[in-house]
Length: 106
Image 1 (cartoon, helix red, strand yellow):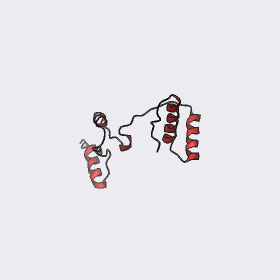
Image 2 (cartoon, rainbow, N blue to C red):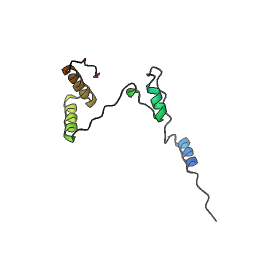
Image 3 (cartoon, rainbow, N blue to C red):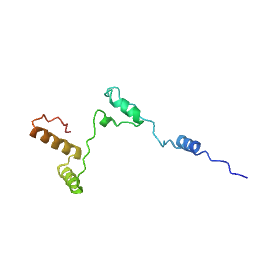
Image 4 (cartoon, rainbow, N blue to C red):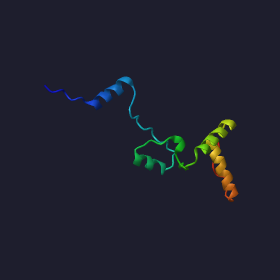
């Protein structure tokens, strides 16, 4: 006698329905005031976009661990977010090169 094959996906669906949890939550809709170019990129990748990231881009940089540690310590000392400190630094850089300080600091 052979064993009956297990339908894993059906078991997961019934678990999700029974427990009220979802393995892959349904994506939240993008608010209507969102920029038009942000919505297609989310649709193409199949990922949801955090509302705080709509209309923004990421700038990544590789630094020594000591740099990140020092930035984290300054953030703790001043009770500011690391992102706000980086925005403050970008504004200082813009001013140095004769550009308007446009990086928003909350």
